[in-house]
Length: 120
Image (tube, rainbow, N blue to C red; front, side):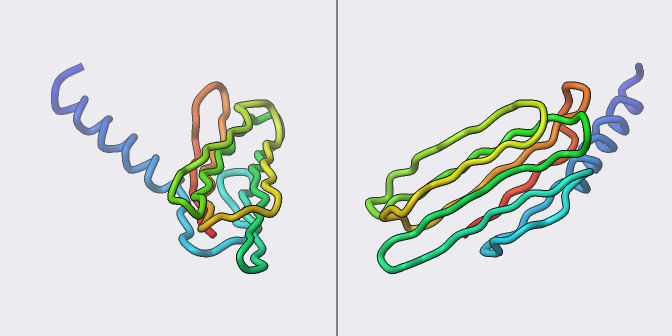
């Protein structure tokens, strides 16, 4: 493979990754991504928060969900579910938290083809 073709291939793959990524800042809820859906639901009762997040891939696909919880003292706690075939889900009960960021990945044939992030 010559150098010009390699550069074009890398650029095309990078563009594909950017096109299949979903980012929704400060918007909890459910969003379509790839062949499935991602969601982050949160609730606040001052001074407490709780969250539920997950990835629902298409048939026969795998998923990975990570939740980064920023605690009221500034520490971050990372929780992970997956990768596994089918849905992944994380639930955090009422806690002193400043916010949540979820990271989602859908996997087909061993390769991640769609990823996204949500915040609450």
